[in-house]
Image 1 (cartoon, rainbow over the protein chains, first blue to last red):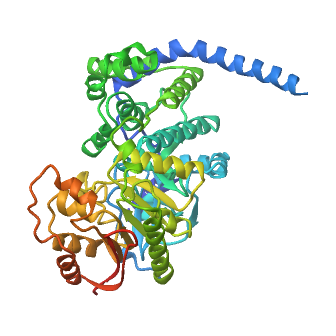
Image 2: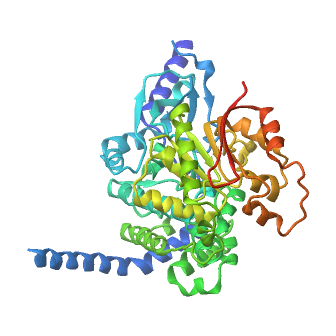
Amino acid sequence: MFNKKRTRLAILILVLVAFPQPAYAYIDPGTGSYVLQIILAGILAVPFVLKRYWIKIKSIFKGSSSK
Amino acid sequence: MTNKNSDSRIPSSFRDPSGYLFQRDGIIYRQINQVYRENYEHLMTSGLYDTLVKNDLVVTHVESGIQTEAGNNVYKIIKPEKVPFISYPYEWCFSQLKHAALVTLQIQKTALNFGMSLKDSSAYNIQFRKGKPVLIDTLSFEKYRVGEPWVAYKQFCQHFLGPLVLMSYTDVRLNQLLRIYIDGVPMDLASTLLPFKTRLNFSLLSNIHLHAATQMKYEDKPVKPADKKMSNTGLLAIIDNLESTVQKLQWKPQGTEWGEYYSDTNYTQEAVNHKKHFVTECLEQIKPENVWDVGANTGYYSRLAGNKSIPTIAFDIDPAAVEKNYLTCVKNKEEHLLPLLLDLTNPSPCIGWENKERMSITQRGPADTIFALALIHHLAISNNVPLIKIAGFFSKLCDYLIIEFVPKSDSQVQRLLATREDIFPDYTQPAFENDFKEYFNIKQFAKVKDSERILYLMKRKV
């Protein structure tokens, strides 16, 4: 009986060690701050992608003009 | 055999269940708990840690074999690289806070490239090492869960963006709000204090004013997990927007009353040279491990120590002086000089939980040597502190003191007395010497050439 209990405890510890729980956010991200980010992501994503392409295009021209 | 009983937990390290800092035999260690194992392994094996170290963005650490009593909860003990002096955001000038903000965003962008994200963005996790801001919390990273917004966005706005915008648009002294609000300036307060023109700027309108409004609207309201989704591109766009917003923020000391102060001294070149020679000689004699220059102005005399590779803190009450000093340090890539904002008449106290989270200035001392040059009249006359109290305070802060006595006949003292009654009959050189002899032995003194001022080298009585 005692051995069974010990075995169960050992298995439990092993499981806890082998499969650690994910570390959840310990600070409050704030619901309002989350909602705002989702709205901003929607607004800023397209200009951001265009900006990245523009930087790439500029670097191609810069690269070719320096050759 | 290690002495586990001598372990003392660092009072600032208790919020994050991923681990905590403790001190053993004068060395600081960080315990990593089992709950953080997966994240730590990803940080170390993904190449993120190496990339951050290579770019001077995070402090290095080594894994330590020491034992603790934490039992099954402990996954690893690491020994982080020591940062010579811990400073706080309310002691930073505008550009120091701005650079710390930009480094935080750079770290977040790098982390996202390696499938991780910052789970906090506290300004207290950034410290100045070799003149540059660096992350000191190795446990700040978590695996990025695709589609999730940035957990630390609100904290970033409270600790960095809000205070910077307030300093830039309203008043540079509003960084002192960080001393009151330990988790950063609340968005609604920042929104209230900012001028209307900030609402005409899209980034400031959204990240501050609308941020405050959405926080109010969704206060105490949970959001369904399915609604909390955004694209990775959207997240990168927000980080990019924050980065360019911070980058554009400016504060220039010109035009303030302080801006003119530096050229307004009553010193001749010969007096400056003599003072410089006296301080240099003292440094060669003492060979201090570190120096605090209290009342450093833009750091002219602090650099006598800093240029000798002595870790030096250049404190000043004036945000413009600290700003100018810091920008000079950045320009010249000075590694041993750290300018900080400090009002010696009301120095940084212990704040936070149990009044222990952030250390007072005295707790971060004592310094080996203090410079108190052209300062005594500001303390004794402008602030009415009796000389004996000044001597007592300095004796708690240092072993060696290089101090300048500025007599009443000096034009700078006369200027302080011009608008008030002279209630300081005891402000004399003999009284100064007598009071300081209570706590210090005078090792050396010299009358500054071309001046009525006297320089002293003193050693604290044991």
